[in-house]
Length: 308
Image 1 (cartoon, rainbow, N blue to C red):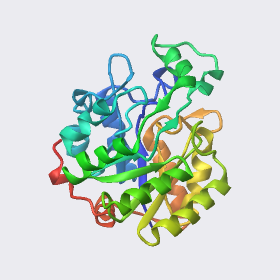
Image 2: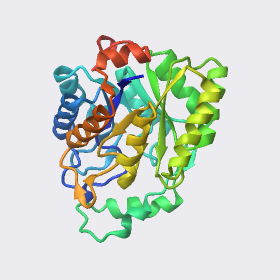
Image 3: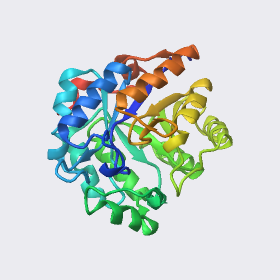
Image 4: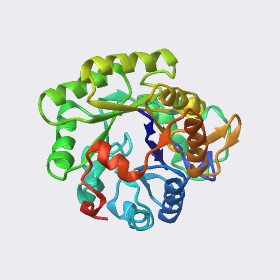
């Protein structure tokens, strides 16, 4: 398959504003970077919101409304809203904005897991906000909760009731089997868009062997009914997504996953990362898919049915 999907995750809930001046925080910043990333070649924009006053991760629909209409008006990108939000949020909070918007796509973490961010404290820095350091420190006792009941609720609320399709985030081998379970229950149907996630402490390590093993097991569980994409945290981002592209998979980049563009160099924008990976995948002979090609491949409902 020569066509390749580039997803860009603009801001996330892991990195804090003190880590990079280029991390988009306000609605205007997220919108501007999302539009630029789409223009650079990202067909899917993976979206979180932040409180513009503090930069803290937010699930409030009003904060999503600070950038969704602008991105939708300026691009044809697929808007993929997070249902993960942040590990400190309740499921009700995490679903508030996606349930209101009814996006074409939503992310879905396929299991409960440790989600340790405290290793990022290793570098000395001046904190812009008083919440940042405790947020990272307390992650040594942090569990991201997505039980089978939670997953079923998300699939029902967003999938069955609102027609969304999913970016199934699999941080570990067990998450593939959980997805197979829900497919067997009839709560999800192919094609499955599976995002393998590497490098988060609590999930899979960023080893090439882990990627080949995940593909091998997914092949056995889902046959021809799935597409896989890869994201990797920090310095492992470009090497692993490049490997995914060479294997025939798809790629995700963005400041949610890595703040750098090269060793010791902060990325100045999400679009810079998209431009870099686009050059890499095209050099491998892959053709970057348009948003409408992605809609057809993933059986999405179309932007006209999204309440932005």
